[in-house]
Picture 1 (tube, rainbow, N blue to C red):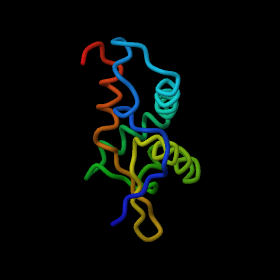
Picture 2: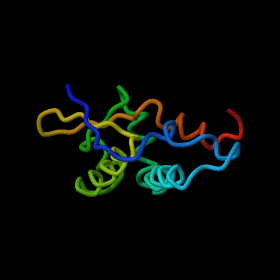
Picture 3: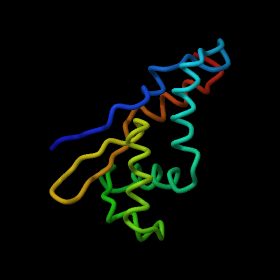
Length: 117
């Protein structure tokens, strides 16, 4: 079993301190903006929810197309954006790819947006 993710922006926990505690740098803002852009789409928000709630915490594109009412290429495009942002990992098994939420990804984002820490 291999899990692959393309190198991309750093995880939220690696990029920034809580926004309201001290100003972030331009590089930190760019990294955080890439992460937020990946989530700033209704389909991708649904995918995060669907994959996290799916049995075993992972799902194949074939499990997601019908509930979303989208084609496989469209769903795959959205999943690629989430993998590149570090929100999902991708595990290729034969002809299928399975996606799983990176456990710390949303926790780190929450910590960045928090007023404490």
